[in-house]
Length: 211
Image (tube, rainbow, N blue to C red):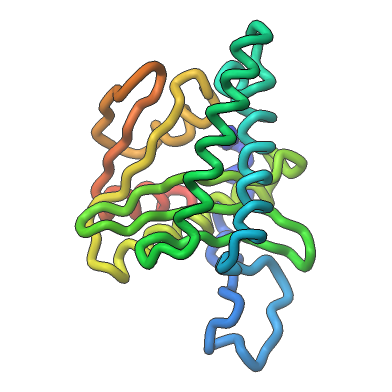
């Protein structure tokens, strides 16, 4: 969904270590209100509905032919819209699952990004991840993406999980180029979807190149 430009990364590489986002309601910050972006866990269906709308808006805005805004015939767009509604309904059912974590990144009242992670035995699967299209290709985008990736790694390691996985639509070229930076095993599942599997140590090493 997002393209990270090398020069953008280099410009902020030395400062990202000082920009680790706080976690809302974390004991360490319970007495000191955070001043920058924070992670906030999503706990109810209404909040989840808003997150899913945010994700689909970001996806369709940036995903070229993979989203409903791509160059398609009317029937294809209607079918894509239907499949997205079914997907969103199924994702909403996961909000009370003990194995699923959904968090957003907020800066005051502004929603910057979101992710959903399923933690199952030896596999942490990223259900979705997105940032606000309005901050595309900015320092805030890079900082938000890297903080979410680091947070996903922390969540996986807290459950002693060794593999992180996700699925990317090959037609979404910008997202595919971003995720292809990880030394992952790739498997084509169906249509244009590609499944990625990466060892968590390799995931962390890749993050260090940018953090």
